[in-house]
Image 1 (cartoon, rainbow, N blue to C red):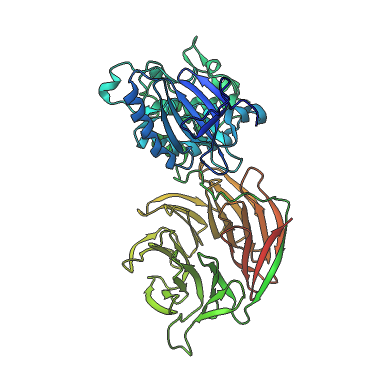
Image 2: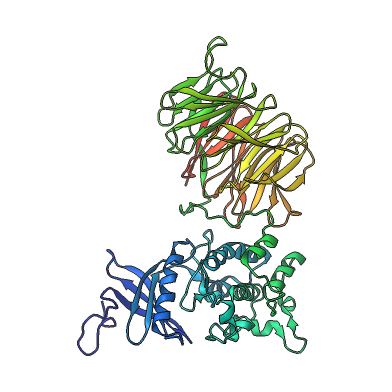
Length: 591
């Protein structure tokens, strides 16, 4: 340790609040200075950031009150945690957690200008953060590239430096000029007059996006001569008209012309309502891996139509073609219990079991089949608790919301039913498909449902309302579906074997991923969306690197017969597959 952390007069260590040791000045502005520091109350000491704030016109009490309001904001995963508020007679210091990574200005200098996809991703990631802080009555007032940190290529950006943040003004307060604060070029016109409102943060975010797209300072993007933005003259890659319109409305100088809220921007930017994913923080593993089969379970006489993993990962359930459902011990591969009728009597299904799902509590199992019934099982007693009948004969797919309150079922008649599990009743039906609904997928938050069917349509629904948000039409019957929040996109597989990603930010955009030799049969995404698995009736199983910008197939694997279902373990390191060869196989990636 050198002498930079010691007083030059007495050589004692300099600690703020008897805890925080400043080691480096990170920046300064009109409202204070920022320091990198060590929190020596932690073992081992942890990095933190100290924001020294110059007293405002409101005085000490107002500054302290404002700072305390910021403590609540640290609950958001994209906002640093407020560790402490330090007061002195001269100034006020906010101590926040340190966020490792480059800020967006540094990324611009190292990686070059953003393209439209990156610009959209940035807005989709940060607008929910502004929703959060504005909903708590706070305005950041200093949105700029330097105050947005990217922890990594596959993690959401973090909004930092709340030293300028203040409570949103009332209508009466707006009549009087307040403190002028913000960064030159990024502060909205009304903010430059000391009258910042929530829409001022939207302006700063819009200017930030323009700077990243053009590489030019905001002052160079506005023409005083013609009194309008000329940023399009500096864009090297063409932008869609819809995205350009969103940017122009974000940076409108008049409040009447600008978006009034983050909600309004998201309505235009993400019409499907699926925003940037808060994916698992599990570290990404190298993509140059060899995936190989590590286990094979034989299921003689019992072809698995569908598989599910228990929440704790200790059990696997199968829905079988021979009218049975089975519960397996994950470690040993032994059958714990078989749910089936005996000689046509007792509890169980009267026809092939087509779908299976665990309740989030791990104590209950739901099965559905071609007999048109949904059956609810207690996994502590292996007894059936309830049996419900879908209006259409033969159930093809089920989906269970993460909170365990709602079950969605689909059948051959084109009907999708939404069930209240607490009441044990069908709430309502979604009837738009013409013919069999082959597969269902829920978004992570349970607010969006995707369905595909024999009528070649992909439909997106809002839950719990059941409103149909959009319909896409394919060339042939669609067989399987999954929702990716990191894209964001819906991935489908059709009867011809074609897999397609349909954009959820531009409904007219779609990308063909691959073409197999027989019908698509299964799609699975790992929890952190690093891996995408695609299964086909031609026996092939593809594993794709999905999370990040380099999306590509990295492994081609095979069963001895067509794939019937796929699911990743919770940690994303293992893929479980079922097939018509009466086996369940486990695949792991290895360096």
